[in-house]
Image 1: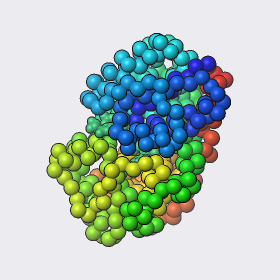
Image 2: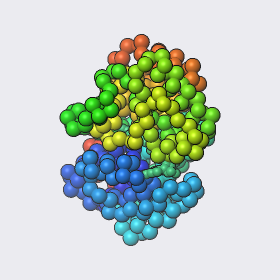
Image 3: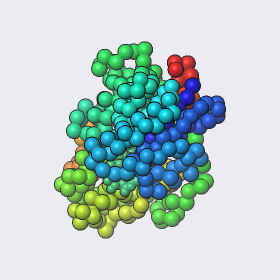
Image 4: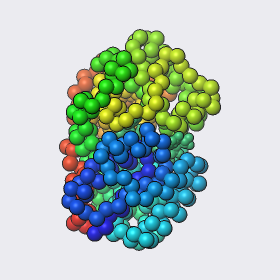
Amino acid sequence: MKISIILGTRPEIIKLSPIIHECKKLNLDLFILHTGQHYSFDMDRVFFQQLELPLPNYNLNVGSGSHAEQTAKILIGVEKILHKEKPDIVLVEGDTNTVLAGALAAVKLHIKIGHVESGLRSYDYTMPEEINRILTDHCSDILFAPTNNSKQNLRYENIQANKIFITGNTIVDAVFKYKKIAAKKSNILKDLGVCHKEYFLVTVHRQENTDDINRLKRILKGLTQLHKKYNIPIVYPVHPRTQKKMKEFALTSERIKLVKPVDFFSFLQLEEHSRIVLTDSGGVQEETCILGTPCVTLRDNTERPETLRVGSNILAGTNPEKILDCVSIMDEKNKKWTNPYGSGDAGKKIVTIIKKVV
Ligand code: UD1
Ligand code: UDP
């Protein structure tokens, strides 16, 4: 059996790492196809190095562009390689343009698709990720749902039950594996001059928040007010998309420590020790839930409702007062909850299923 792993962005590299490691351990025939959707060192190569992943066998170097341009370039590039390599299964993870284009190229060539982190739904059809998720789920042969909730979302869309496997989320595998190593290897708290539970960590990169100047302004205003109220540092590793938009809109804030995106070990450390994390990232909502750090989500909806249910996360949107209220609620509440994303063996489960089904 020949497996093709298609990836292209930071979260895909991190979340597919447990599967790649498991395949390597079992000596399975595998090749990695990187689309090049992310390409800056600190959004891409740093994770291959740190997670000790084999370098991609192919890199399409598609880079940035409009949705149509990026998706089309990936489709064309992936098709050529799949034609040549003829894998038995293509694995994609998540909801990016890389995922949609990888799945579309494969399905037209009658190659089986396994969708890792399947069945997530925000029911917000203005999000590019929601369209990518739905279309990918509907052309996949094996759907690896992280939770029963995600399986139910797929069942509501009439996807056959025998194609769906609840596996947990591979991010739990990665967090469990690297949490202690991160504590030993990263000096990020010291480097940034911040202390345990005496700072807030922020990430913002979602299209809806960055491309709309009013939403981005409101978020920055909320963060400035947060700093005034609590008088502790706000650490914000800025995603390149947001950096570009802040420059274009001439937005900044002297009260926020703006830094470049950090490596995975440093980010895990920052998440674990932060008093509260404010974010619009999907992966960060999950990681904070796993690590026991409260999360305030700077969105109006989430495809990770499990985090709301267990109480690790709250939806704030972008209204500055609401952001402050949500921080205060999360600050005061009981910080003990159960991680709904599995016990850290999702990668193993997924590879076992592939070996059986393909
Ligand atoms: C993409 C995904 C999003 C995911 C995010 C993870 C889609 C539609 N969006 O969003 O779901 O949450 O990745 O981080 O697939 N840029 C760089 N260097 C890079 C990559 C991007 O400078 O290595 C800049 C470019 O200016 C680019 C912008 O960031 O135009 C956006 O990149 P893009 O890949 O289009 O989308 P993301 O916002 O990264
Ligand atoms: N991350 C990182 N460095 C950073 C910010 C995030 O290593 O500076 C990691 C984080 O631990 C998580 C993933 O990147 O595993 C989340 O990616 P992102 O927020 O870009 O995408 P999303 O999960 O929203 O698709």
